[in-house]
Length: 274
Image (cartoon, rainbow, N blue to C red; front, side, top):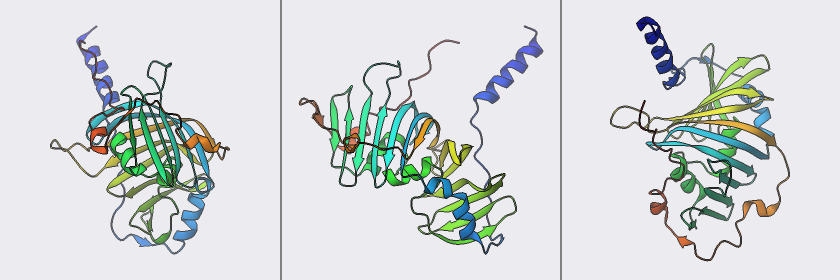
């Protein structure tokens, strides 16, 4: 291959592999936005109507400073119910873990390690798995593009292409116009920036989360993208979906600190060689 052509190919390859820069969200006072509550209500109508949510989630990126990757079958329901199964990367065999939660209980079963974690808040377990601290209701809100569960607007600012809506609790939702009306395309909460993209029937099919926290090189500790397929909403779940019963008797009980050393979603290192 001629040298010039080779350089073009290498440049395209490197650009394709580079991490896309986060959205540049507006700051400052902006202009007054009197109808901020109506705009948020219109932008979040589809996600607020979701009471149960089922999807296949493909994760890629970094979470808490660790390279993550994998596919997760997810089921979530109001109030505070969750079931996550890490699918076998080979496409067959038992999931790598089962994680279920209800308002009064949470259990993580690591099948390969024959370990189980109980009695820990589900948000702490999810944070150990992904680097992002979300309880089941807020996870459902994020995956459906609502940003937070039970969002309550307190003010709004117009920045031209963006409208910023302040929410009770400190979160900020960022809206942009679309053919269907205002759409919630980004938000910040708890030191994290969320980006919502590839909308279908009012719900995003891609969610990216980037942390304010940085490592020693200046790279975000968390920059994780979830691609959502096989989405189904407001389906009926059986009650036992969110329970793990009849677990193997030989499971070893572990602590949250011990879970942090397991990292079941950690991506394998790239193969050696060119």
